[in-house]
Length: 414
Image 1 (spheres, rainbow, N blue to C red):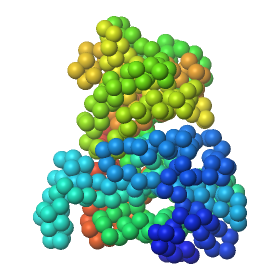
Image 2: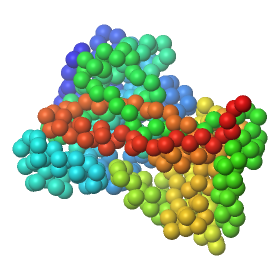
Image 3: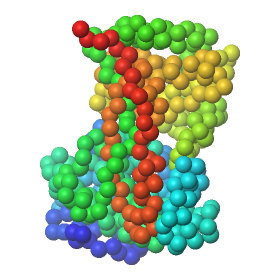
Image 4: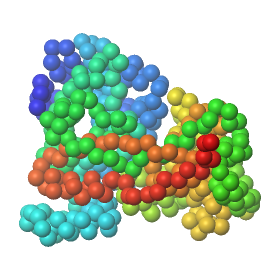
């Protein structure tokens, strides 16, 4: 490794301007409140909601599993030139669900006896400590930003240098651990740098993106671009929604309905095969109070009760970012709640003259029926010890997308 800065004692870890080399230094923080706002925003420039200090403070209050955050500001001489965001998450065996547990059972019978003994005696203990460069709550490149004057090769060299130092100081080698760099739209360069540092590249579930054509000014004109089969399908979906009323909620209304919103969100969370980080109970009202015009929560009412909701961000790049949703599974089939949520996102983007909608991961095939196209995301993982090397293969297999059939609802071009 090219490490210039060696790990230090815990008392000295959070001292400012730790020297990397003759040109670069960095400061490490364990709380978003402690970050010097001026230096952090000199890099973010308000262009990345999910790297803004106020949003990261909310993330620190997440539940379900232990989450620890680390924040780094990189300096060239004394001028900020980059920021890096880390999450450290502890996984218990139960988090992986039946699929991974079956794979682990397979490993137990064929691989290391040491691992078998560990699993047998620590069923409720941490199975994996994941040191993530990025945000496990959202899809996308939210792990670091560098000044554009710094070339990619130099930036990635500095990034891996700091990851090496900070991860060692977290004592990852003492537990079953891995380092994850997540959600890149294209491979990181130079490829040899990551290969030399023993990072394995793999794909995860893709983002599903809807591009809004320039001549589309309403949801009706968007649906008109569909083939007859999918137009009829959309009309049927809308027809099933006629008894549902919708409303954009302000901060006070979100607080009023927060218990029901959270209950619907929990229904989605509990059905996920990979239950990692649970949102804090006041998440939606907290985010709305900070991003009043950028963040929307739309509630869907049936007989006066909220049966579904959808949240989204209006992003600086003129796109709509679908965020967390929730719906009543028992009523979903009758009212097509989920598919109407998808169309409501597209409608919201069109009304706000936005150019695209990021519908996020999961349910890829259904999302393509409303016009979304898959955008592959690449991750990098590096095991930290023998046992994590054993876990790596089933872990990657678990994260990789299942097979699905893409649909094309649009008319065939002549």
